[in-house]
Length: 237
Image 1 (spheres, one colour):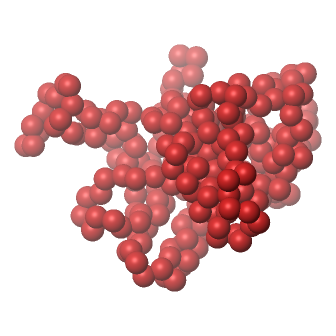
Image 2 (tube, rainbow, N blue to C red; image 1 turned 45 degrees about the vertical axis):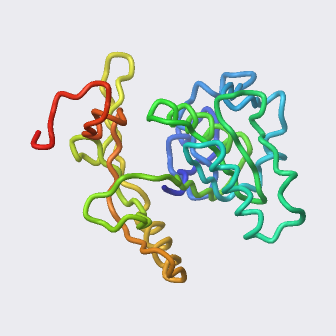
């Protein structure tokens, strides 16, 4: 979870690479400037077919999670929490034209499903960040909501992740791009984590802590489970 980086919106200039604090969503890809149209294929949205600033320009928070049904339920929950008019039945799936992801907008909050696994999340994030950029959104905070296992903590505990680690417990994400391994840091926004923890003190129905979260490429073997179709290890390794 982290506020999304900002851009100075000066296309085609060296300053594009500079982090300028004006709140715009940062896009680090100069090739987008050459496109006559940017099609967000998996969202069924595009810069020519949709008025993205009008549709999404007021977005301040983006909450993402794996399941389409969960993210619709979350959108309904936010609708009630914000005290918006109606019963929420008018909340529609903006991505209904595709079966890849679901997206719901409730006031300044965007609720999006990302499917299962790193590749599915990566595709969604690419198109989400471009969407927020094209919509000229400012000061956006992105939070992932989901379930996970836990070691050494009470079941039902809400864990606010400050660092995501890979299968080697390293705070980094490796991706092969054109025959080169690119390593990116996975430390998240520390102040946001502290702010969320402070907010949780108003809720006594479940414990909340700050902790690290491991992300692997596989649900069964990658997480050391013994009940997959393949298993080359035991409880004692």
